[in-house]
Amino acid sequence: MDSPILEPSLYTVKAVLILDNDGDRLYAKYYDDTYPTVKEQKAFEKNIFNKTHRTDSEIALLEGLTVVYKSNIDLFFYVIGSSHENELMLMAVLNCLFDSLSQMLRKNVERRALLENMEGLFLAVDEIVDGGVILESDPQQVVHRVALRGDDVPLTEQTVTQVRKTFLAPLSAIKFKSSINWLPPSLLWP
Image (tube, rainbow, N blue to C red):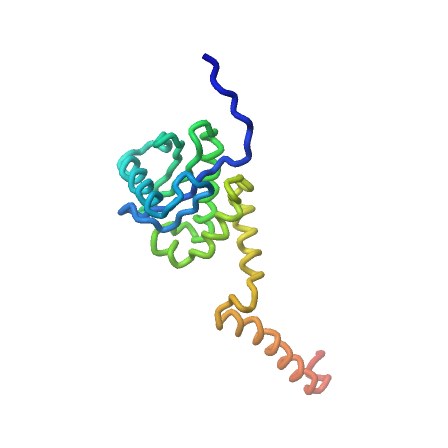
């Protein structure tokens, strides 16, 4: 009885989920068609939550999938891979996501803070996993890249306050410089 040899693949992550303490979805990103409809996805998420919310372990095998998870205050973080996937790689993704969010939210990883900073969560997950392929496992690099991408937001996607800061800061510097030009030289250089 020979077991079939599986071809190596870069596609290791099937989904990244964040659920609240009631098992409701706060964030979900599926990278394949294992659960193609939202109804199937939500049923799977409820099943995962019911199996994991009362246990202290970090890994579960459910419906032929490897699930690594972590809970914090009122959030449950899940990284899901196939049954033959390396649990340590999935755990590295989970730890990277959690540590990145912890740094971005200043150690305040809870539901309210996460909902207020969803754009940071989206960027962090995109930096860690792309199309199911693990790109980064260092939280410092993820936080740095998210900060860089946050600075490069197009003008059309910025808030009014951000646009005001962008345009008024150079104007105030120009106004200050022009007022200096009118001062007598004796006041400028002692």
